[in-house]
Length: 367
Image (cartoon, rainbow, N blue to C red):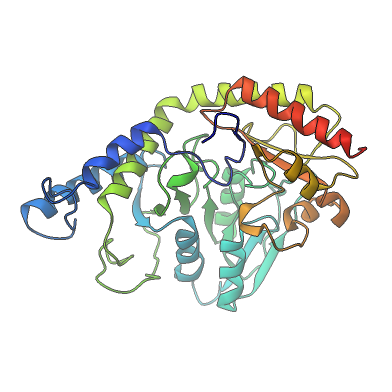
């Protein structure tokens, strides 16, 4: 990365932690080390690779509640699709409820099933009412822990309790919260991914509480306890595992660091309006708007800074963010928004320089 480039897009992805890279290297080497072996083979090299996978499984599982099993997947999108489409629900509970600000991996998967759906509204703070009433036919409730666009932290433990009272299972997209805040203790299914916590891209996991029945989304050799087929990459697993281990060790330090960066950014961008709750939010995500802002021009004027208008998944569509419209913003207001994402390796100098440049560029637009 060029020395003058400032990366503030950590909700889209995070840089690979040096510790995770080092953990991956032995499994990326050539034939002299046998690190390339298939972890599902029974010979010595295969067993060594399988052992590395199981070490990683334990490290990743340490991010999540006790009393469940961890299934490695290609990422959180696959994990959320498997949970949404393949959970075995009772015949009299075919419906699904999800918040209006859920990731499209949940929304589109739910709609593809043809099951009855209930969209749960959010307040102007971007929060689901923890006492919300679910439809009588609801068998699965999905609410994310930390929103990827506006950073709001949902009351997922209470919502899980409400889902159980209604006879439903609770699915939590913990992609933005895993390794950063305490896991959703009462969830039945949890989806996470490595590249949002300083691990490699291409691997995620679905945690399934003991006793919860779920079917396979991908059929084949049934390598992951019959619930997910396909050859696992020891390198990706090792990188995920080490990233998870470091996240557990650094959780409090990372939180304090990011809280300081968020405070610094707000002191410089005080005239900008925060989108979503200013209290119940992850400090590494700062979603802001400024009336009259021309985002494409800002992006060009500040091309030495990596930031976004919202979700990287929805960029380029031209449509206003459905998350921002769900919290009550008009389409023009939603288009006046930017998202700054701070991370473990972001410095105070990075934040001060970037925020001053962004504010100055906005002033050049006359806003």
